Image (cartoon, rainbow, N blue to C red):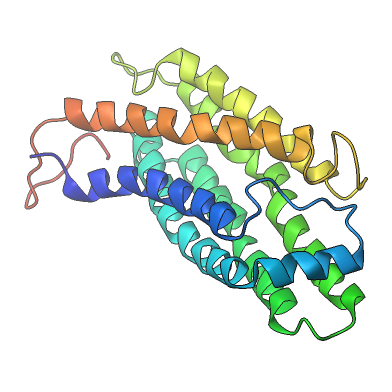
Length: 238
């Protein structure tokens, strides 16, 4: 049989993504709240979706653990490209861990905003703002993970490539799109608001493609490996 640990890490990517989507559905904000909402409207929204927002925050807190496991599977494959010295493999893994860390404060700020709705509306609005900015703006540092993956694919000198070259360019495109998250704090309306096309919808669309594509390529590599031997050594570096 194949390495069950590696297979589990591959599956973790889709689990993380499904939890992320479930948080949006549970909170009633699959379409993000507008940053242009008044303080009164923000409070009214929280009152209407109180339980859902709390559940969404729990999903947000759980999903990073699965994404980190997925990053570990990617790291194992990049190590097959780089060999014993694997700076790109470990750098993209570190970025993957860093990128999901803001999920924790985002969930806490949303929970805090929902915790005392009898406070002044402006405080709830401020907590909500910080939660959404923690959610969207880390897309900018997240860009460097797929960019490093792309570079690793292009430097592959193995006779049989670990990943095809087209996957490198797909990762470069993913990284470029993620960069737009850093503009979420510049405006409350339009394409560059946190609910706009550039910081939210384009990155969400390409992330929806990136997780399944990377999962399939990892699964394909795992399927092509020799039978798993728990007591032996892995010569492929995975």
